[in-house]
Structure formats: structure tokens, C-alpha cells
Length: 492
Image (tube, rainbow, N blue to C red):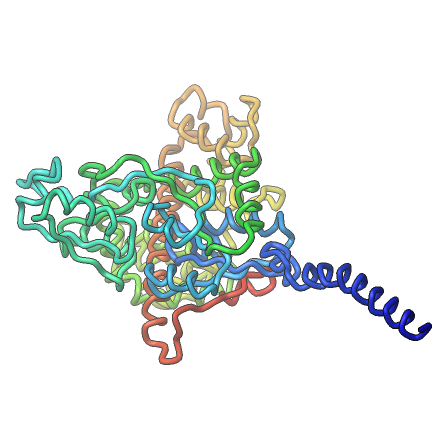
């Protein structure tokens, strides 16, 4: 009897123990999505390589989407891993296969997409715009009827929200036709329109406004819809911990301020050059620059001067023409004088490699004339201005700057006073007298403009190169990931 009672008590105790332990075990085995990410230490972000989302600038990652997700992962305390599909459409298959946690590529939160995915709180709103190139003698399309009537070629991104929009419009306008591409990016479609290879494309208005000045002649005809939300996309999960965390981040005041800063940084950029200058520059990038590009890289390796700065100076001097000659006898891509060429051991000023590498070494000697206390980039702007107008006149302008109570070590202050050297009441009070003070201001300004435009062209090239390499890789799968960390940035 005693044994039977003891066995019953033991069985009862075991049942009680299991009742308490099983929930604990189940809880231990069922981590939340956010908890699993934090424990792994990595968040996978699916995006595309483009000027509006993510790109490499001077060996460092940049872009609206990148900077925003980077801020979120830093807040979480995890590393950011970028997953880059080879086409826009593969963003969705990548997410369906759960090869990423969040997708961000200027994605519109459409009703059709919301049937499959979850979307965060919107961080921007944008309309869908029809883009065309102005051509003399041809009227711009005013509405959908103009688009349907004319025998024009409209090409858009496949699997995009624009395709969804056109399909809905087509129900009321059956004659509306278009082509979809998986091979081109939005920027490449803009180039196609610019080069008159296609007539129209469709792009988010916010993206077009950020890029239109780099494609002279392209204009927005009209919007095809009302402003739509842009948001991050997530695959549905059995808990909403990640989605809730993302939304809390996007709704913070600090994040809203960051978004405004990123909008200004990436979407309110403007091309400082005019229509003609930009058109000529784009042609020269395609035709002249590739022949001499390697020499700028070599020059940077020898002198540590950024190759884009050297290329911009060279373009300002000669438009990358190795046979350029000025009325004063300076010649070559870097337009070196005989004295400057001798100083840096250049024997043939018309030889592109000698001219570029020699010009870089000469710039090093030029920069040494500027006080070391002046930080970059002002140190470089002073060096270029002094080279252009003469260091004595530059010092005179700095004296005038100091007299006015401004900072003689700050280029933005000194450039206001250089033009005063053309006025007797000013130049008569300084050591070196009259100078064509407007010229160095324009000289430095133009070089800075060319740097900006060259950076843009390199971003576009990089996006194209990535797509080509992905297509050529026989082992390429539907997605590729790159972990972005500070210690490996130069290898990206």
C-alpha cells in the first residue's frame, strides 16, 4: 500500500513538474524575429546599387537607403549585411525565400504587394512621373491620350510598381502599350531617353528630381498618380517584433530629422553645369576619359592626391585633350608650363602619362605653399587659387579678408575678397596690387563642379558594372550578399 501511494505521489509530482517546465521549454525554443537578429548580430538588408539607394563613394558606402538602414542597425547594435539581387524583380523573390530581413530600394507600398509582404511606416511619398526628352519641333506629351495616340516607345522596369500602375490604367485605356525590362536600371532608362534610344520611361518623381540635372534635356511630362508611400518591405512573420521595431525607429523625431538631412543630401543635389557643358562632359567621359583613366589612378598612388580631383583639374585645363595648347605655350592634359614640366621631370608635355603624373607631383609642391594649419578641403582650394592667380595675390585677398573681420583661412570667406583685387580702392592698399581676382574664383568653382559631375558618372558606371558582372558569373545565384564593415570598406 505504501509503495502504491509513493508511486502515485511521484507521478503527480512529475505531472506538476512537466506542467511548469513545458511552457518554459517552448518559450526557450521560440525566439522572436527581432531577438534572433540581435542574437546573431547581423541584419540582412536587400537593396539595389543605384544613386538613389546604395553606392560606393570614395571606397565608402553611401546612399539614402544605406544611410537610413545603417542608422537603424547601429541603434540595434548589430552589423549590416547588404543583399544585392541582380535585378529589381529579384528583390521580391529574395524576400519570399527569406534571404533578407528588410528590403529597401525606393519601394512603393502598393495594394498588390501588401497581399504578400508587410510594409513599414512610410519614410517618403512620391508620384509616378512620365519622363521625356525635349526635342526641337516635337511637342511634349500632356496627358495619357497623347501617349496613346503617338507611336512612341515606352520602357519601364519589370516587376515595378510602375508596371502595376500601367496595368490598372490599361483597363480604361486598352490601347496603352509599353515594354518591361529586367536588364536595365532606372538610371539606365533615363540614359536611354537622353540618348534618344527610347521615347519615354516612368520613374518615381523624387528619384527623377534628384537626377534630372545630370541628364540635360530630360523633363517630367506629367504625373500618372497621386503621391504614393515609399517604405521598407518585410516578409510576414509569426510575430511582428521586427516590424514594430522598424516602425518605432522611423517614428522617432531623431529619425525624421535624419530623413530630412538625407533628402537634402541625396535628392536635392543639383548639377552645377549648364546644358551644353554637361552634354559635352558626358561625351568626354565616354570617349576621352577611358584612354587616360589609368594614369589618374597611378598618379594618386604616387602622390596620395585623390584621382577625381586630378581628373577634374585636368578637365578644367584641357578637357582631357593631350594635344591641347594655349596661346601662352602651356600644353598637354595638365597644361604644364616649361618651367613646371622641368621641375617634375616631364620631358614630353603631350604624353598623357607624363603630363598627368607630373601634374600631380607639381600639385604636391603647389599645396606645400599653403599653411599646414588650413584644413582640407580649403587647403586644396587655396592651392588651386594660388596656382591660378599667384600666391602673392592670394595673400593679398587673405589680408583683405582679415581686415573685414572674416576668416583668412576659410575659402568661402577669401573667395569673396579675391574679386576686390580688380578695384583700385582695394588693390592699392595691399602689397601685390591689381589682379584678375574673378578668375581664381571661377577656376576653383569649375573644378569643384567637375568633381561633382565625375562622381555622378562613376556611380552610374559602378551600377552598370555590377549588373554586368552578375550576369557573367556562372556560379551566380538569385542573390549575393556583402557584409559592410568599417575594416573592409576599401575592398568593396
